[in-house]
Length: 466
Image (cartoon, rainbow, N blue to C red):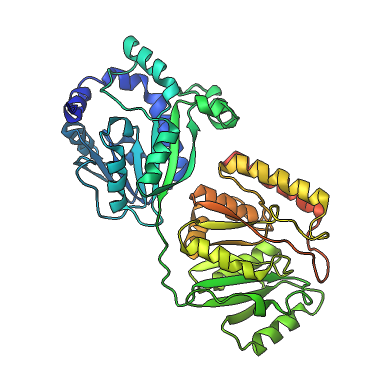
């Protein structure tokens, strides 16, 4: 026989005052967790909103809270703080109006058909929508039972507490793709000094994360992005002292989908790179649209950001002017973005065998170390954080600029800015193996010791911020 959850939560609304007072710190932690990822001013839909404390705390542009209990919705409407609230059951219908963010905060335990509910959520989603799901970690069920007996928690309705893997499996079966999954709230109480130590540091360590009180999952709809521009892809090529490398570049860059543009951004070369770039742009007769500029500032990231600002395509990609990564691989990058398999494609030079002089052994060890540390911080696997070939949608790049102003001039390369920003939004990042070749001209523009020190500082800032 089906349980009357609406009746239970109507009853709980009149009896949970004492238990809610004990759990204030726990719910404050959940709010802070969501605020880390969800900036104010977005359109947010929360199913199972209770009295709307979490939704109101996120300060949405438009906030809609839905709950099965008429009594808690009545209370939520007394102090709406700019949000709307309505009674509804996720099993019977979903909202067809698209939202930027959908939240299920400790709701899945009370759903009779979780897969059906996940499918209904798709009606309110677009390819850029993010679903934030929290649930009780099953290892804490004995603690919850003890809390009920001691009066710290209200007597629970029959619940189906699922493991993290169970929830991820149901999401994937229902048309969602998991971006991040982990444990949060190793210490679910607001205790000064101890709370940040446990919940910002120790919870990230191997094994300890499995003991956290909450399962935290971020997912996106499995959908292809809509490309509207006549130019599908903009290839940004930052060049400095690369006159002998870029001569044949335009013959190797593939024409992608509806159209491809190539934007050379030259940055204060000591050789004749600028003259070569101008000559290539003027003489080219192929299917690509080619433009060239001189960057206004200094450094690779300044050149890339300037090129991105001039780009007309829906998809942006960086391709280094030394041509050590074959340009032909850009078709694979584009296919991963256009199919919806990835939202940022990050080149990885550390999979295929590389040519003998492409990367010295010490550089390879440093690259592997940085990639390992960055993967630990971002909670997404990154094989090669310093590969110069990266592709993403232009609209996602604009969101990174808007929502992740972390580094300023600290990151001269841009790799950390893009990867950190992608994890902050968050985007689905996928590595794509590339063949790494020897330089055919000149020397690298990287200063190993000074740039290595910059990377260490960036790692520290990344760890602190996330």
